[in-house]
Image 1 (tube, helix red, strand yellow):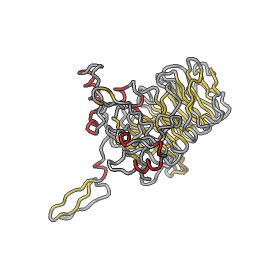
Image 2: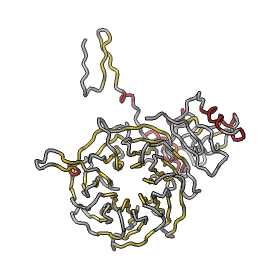
Image 3: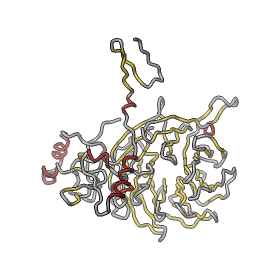
Image 4: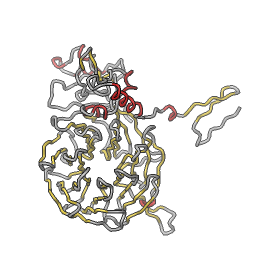
Length: 479
C-alpha cells in the first residue's frame, strides 16, 4: 500500500508492511489551554463549601486539575503573578514584529497588529497562530490597484467594551473599523497627520479617542469622518491615551514628560502631572478608577490617586526604560511592566515599593506589548524580536530554588522561569557561589515548594504564603 503526504495534510503516514499507520504532527500533541475546569471547580466549591471551610490547593502536581482562577482568590494578588513560561510563537514563513494586541470579546482570539499591516489571530486555547488576515486599509497600492506598494504597520488597536467592533490605527494616520469577522466596516482616512499611538473607547462605547505623534487627540463618534473634539495641549508626541473606566475623563502621556487629564465634553485640560523627568511612554487606568499608573524612560513607574490628585507610590527596579504597563484584570493592586531590556517585573501596589517578581530574560529586545487574558491566569508579551510568549501561573508542586539574596531584603530578587528537574545540581552550584555565612541549610533547601494559588496546608495550619518573588530559578535554554 503506497501512501502519499501532501503539503496540507494534518497527519504523516508511514508504511509498515501492507498497512500504514499515521503519526500525527507535533501540533496534535499540543495541549489546549482552557479555564473551564478551574471555573467549574470554583462554582462547585462556592456552592457546597462555606468560607470557613475554604479549599486550599495542595503543593503537588495532582492538584493541577483542581487549581482555581484568580477570581476565586481576589484577596491574594500574588495569585495572579504569571512567571511560568508556557509557550512561544511567531509568524511563518516570515517573522513579523507585533506592535499591539487585544483579546476578542469572547476571549476566543488574541488579535495582534503586525508590522506588515495585517491582523494575526492567535487561538486562545491551542496558543498557536490560526491565520493572518490582510487589511487593505493598511496597505498602499499602485495605480492598477492590485499590486502592493507599501505595507503600513498597525500601531494601535482597541476593542469595544460591550460590542464586537474592532478599531485599528496605522503609522499613516488611518483608522479602520472591523466587525467580529474582521471584515471592513468603515475607514477614516487622514484621521491624523502622523502615526496613531493610542485608541480607547468610552465606558459606553459611544465615543472613541485617538492620539498621535502630531501632538493632538481626536474624539470620534459613530465612525464619522471628522472628529467631534480636538484636544490640544501637549507640546510633543502623545505616546498613550486611555479613557477612564466609568467617568468622562481621559488620561494621556506625552514625550514632553507630562501626563494630562482631559474633560472630553468641554475639550479642555483638567490637570497636568509633571512627575517624570523624561518621556512618558504609557499611562493606564486601574479598574477601580482611582489609580493611574505611568511609565517613563527614566525607569520609574508612578502611581497617582486622582481623588487626592497626589502621587502615592513610586516603583524603582526596572533597570531600564519602562515601555509597557498592564494592570491585572482581577487583582486591582497587581501590575506588570515591560522594559527596554526585555525584562518583566510584577509589582503589588499599596504594600511596599519593591518588586514582587522579576523575569530578567523574558525577551531579548524591548517589549512592545502586554495583554492579560480576561480571566487573569495568562499573560501574552511580545518584543521587537518578533517573538510572542505566553506566561501562566506556576503549577502546584513546582520545585523552586532557595533565594540567593535572602539576607539582603532591599534588593528585589530575580525570578527566572521554568521548573527545575528533580535531580538538579544547580542548588550545589549556587551554594558554592555564595559565602559560607550566607549558605542556606540543607533542610532549608528542600522546603521550597508552592501551590498554584499561593496557599498550602501543613498539618492543620496554612503554610507560609509562597510569594515566589524571592526565588531564583535555573536559566532556561536560549531560543
